[in-house]
Every structure is written in C-alpha cells, then in structure tokens.
Image (cartoon, rainbow, N blue to C red; front, top):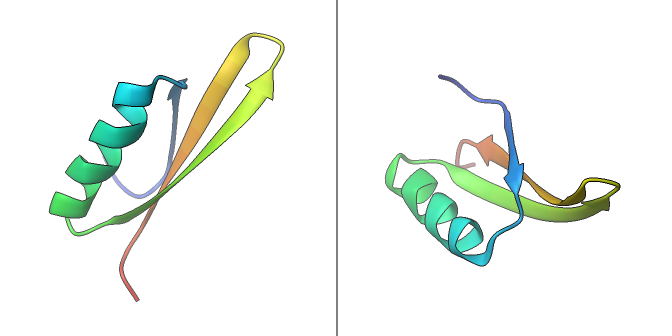
Length: 50
C-alpha cells in the first residue's frame, strides 16, 4: 500500500470512517463523490500534510 487513489461505493459510513483512519496514519484525505453510470463513486486521495 502507498499513496494513490482508492475507489469504492459512495457510502456515508465510508466517507466518514476512511478519512478518520487516514488522518490517524498521518495522511490528509480528500474525498470526492462522483456520479457515474454504475452509481456514485468516491475517490479518496491520500496526501501527506504540508
């Protein structure tokens, strides 16, 4: 595992849980919800703090 982009279903509990986990790991997550033909997808970008 490393810095990258993770995709999953745009579920509220994931939107709130995953960023919290990433913050514990010292990462600053950016969650973006997109609408696609297969449904809503959120893209989680992990960034190191500035």
